[in-house]
Length: 266
Figure (cartoon, rainbow, N blue to C red):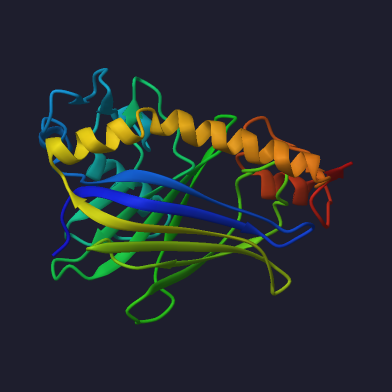
């Protein structure tokens, strides 16, 4: 049975070109039943819903009009992409706000049917310059692992070209959760990222323990992004020039400019 909880484990990144570069960070994330967020965030004195706290959930941090229920926003955005959401539970894997600060490189919405079979996943991807893009994913085939593909649209890293295809693989967020993404160009894997997490109960004690170990998780994430970017620059990885202000629609922008490859600066 799928249920809300804390998921604790590691994030691994591996880059294979033009240089080899890899790292693994420990982290934790929250898995929340989107229909019970307000109730779940009352679990502890240090958690809250739509107000400042050590750990808080803010409706402004996710897609659409924050004055409307999150499920309604998902249904509307899915329909815009030609997808009818199943009517079962939807769980959001995300970083909360910590001391008022939130940055989510990616949040995942796991959408189940009433038999708790995973039918749709939304990967809500953000970059560090205020851009975001929603990748709505349907499984390529019926298998225990949810596999799907998408074309990269959002400028995410100055060291990663835009003309890539994504291949995703997910397990259902039960006792153990794995989310894997690889970036492919011309059938060659350029980069991959893997979340490997294990479930902990959603309780005041578990949340307190996680906060003591990672008191400002989202600030740690942002600092890690910039530190790894500095390491890539030091290794001489070419910089991909951004054509749009916030990186949204970057793929279309450079294709419209007649580029056959991502624009590089050295």
